[in-house]
Image (cartoon, rainbow, N blue to C red):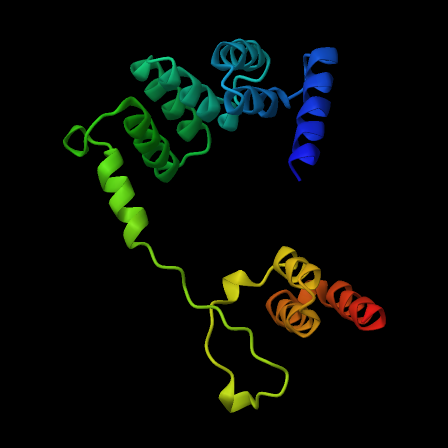
Length: 195
């Protein structure tokens, strides 16, 4: 999986280096941040934002870069610009909290402290998920969070050899997304043939 990600990052980098007009510059900059090449990421973002000044994601990534370089006020201005472009106060609050966390600001200064973030994570609870076995009657089916039903989740179940559970997920997806009914039914048929 990691090699796939590296290959993807290399493709993005090649596209951006050969075609400077590509909006993939933000993805390339993100890869540079992940590789701790903050100065490279800043250069990529500053150049790309000249061509794509209304690209909100690039402004958010730029804000992260700036805060990692200790340029907190500029980082706040960058995330404000990104949030204004998508008219989202929630995004501004989210990225402003990220800036506060990365810069070490405390809760009293308007951000989250690392200690409070760690406490929130420690107290977080995952919702219970129990796909129903095929032999349940309708009255016995337990309640569970349908947000877990995705095609990716079904693929993971298949990779784990949990064919019946994967089919159950696709059947639930048919109910959740009737416009994709034919596609999900064909996936169920493929699975049954392979099993």
